[in-house]
Length: 523
Image (tube, rainbow, N blue to C red; front, side):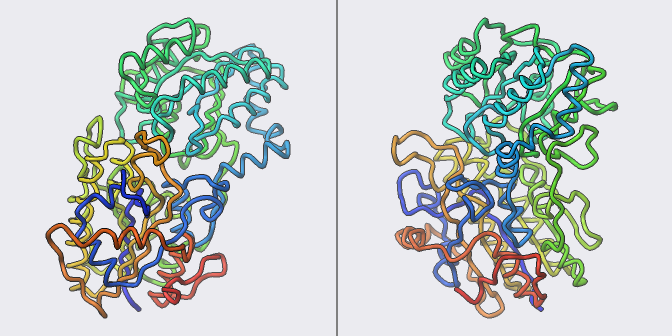
């Protein structure tokens, strides 16, 4: 049995292009040496290989689900799309109960979610399906609370999205856009409840700048230098605020950035800010946002058994999962197949992320503290250690290339220190990523800033440190043309192959539920 350290460099893809490629532009002496001295390949992290629709970018949620489960996990997006196509969506019991509640009280139905073409947290097609559902059920008062993107899309596309939504409203025959606010406020996941309060108070109290037309509000924010992500609170229709007896459908299918806003509506003991609680609401969520939520779920989670963490536990081994706040849910809930509760011999270590408005101001984030926790764990008796470095993804999302280069360099430095300690403890190390981002910071077609995820493959490196010890590196690193060549090679596997590879290294049989293969024999 060999001990395994699994390093996930979040948002760190492979691109053969130089321009806007933070991994190419950064000084990464440790990773350069790793790529040059250990078996490596690239693996696919998007599209059907990752359980999302063909050609769609990967994301952290589905990436960690696939990495941790050892199988292609079909994301909620294609699952919901299929239900809409087949018609079963419109007969869903959770939806029907909200409709009954609203009609019985002659109240309003509110549709709350991210309105963009990004496809990572939501899709406009689901909003349109809900409008059709409301029309078919003859619900007259239907209000859309539009959350703008600018993070998984270009910075200023909401002006176009809102026109598409208005056209669909006219086509379907029901619905009004009541409010607009950026995801920076409505979809915070790092306990910045001062941001959440802006969205909640807009929806419940009507606190925001008043505009007669949705596009007018968006353009006014653009003029004030606010992109879609940080669009200020816009009140379009005062009749559309959320009142007692109303119904709410939260239509984001990805959970992590909707947990805090749902908690704000649901919790009887909420104390993060002075909240005006709305009574007698009938609320449903598109998917499960957290364990034991009070609101019914339209698409409950699919139960997964014999994921990697289960098999390690059943083998009698101990494990430790480490990340900073921004990616903590990914190394726990998502990596463990949607299970919040840790295993008996599983420790989960949370390092607080910096509380700043933009990670471009602190590109190192909390990587150094995460590194310290990993080094501490390496000195204990764990047989499996998982760590996520958030920098490539989170700083990449700022669109600031210089800061992202610094973020990449910070991770490289941390990996160098970790591998030095892991060598002394004779660990076998796997380095990979969940999806691409920081390797394409400039759109190669229009040359604009790119803050979105990519369809790039991701690295996969296997380091048997007992066989070949790591040598810590300094300086600027090697010739990065080697990285470009590596990035041009065809992929060998997919994210789902990583868990079976880990089990093979640990000498544990792969369960039949895992469809992935052992990559160690292929590289």
